[in-house]
Image 1 (tube, one colour):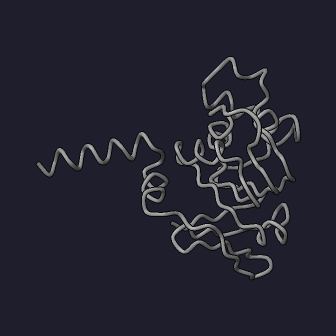
Image 2 (cartoon, helix red, strand yellow):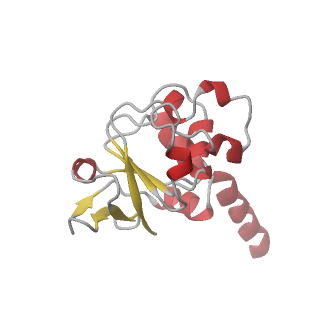
Length: 169
């Protein structure tokens, strides 16, 4: 799968309280959560981010609590992927479960700036920066994770498997 979008760059240790502040956890409505995504680090982010944009960040993105609200808020804001040097493991899994591609590519992060356009190839495990023309290796998903991402999330992937089995017989 090829993902292409404009970059919003953030630093290290962006925790789930920065991604979606706890004061907004009174709702599970993705659209409402999206209005407050990254609010405590960039109060204007939710108003500036466009569908198809990509977040690029440093080490330990998504650290902190295990709330699913964080990747839900990011995805609902229109962000189509997150590239980071590394992810907190629970955030990584929560993102995959909702169908938000998260890719580790430390060298790409180091040489990418806000406003760049990057292309992520989840099949090949690469990230290409169109400004610099450089292509970087990234972690490559196994087939199981690819299926979840392509389906749009874990629940959708399970539903597709159940339907396929029912049709097969």
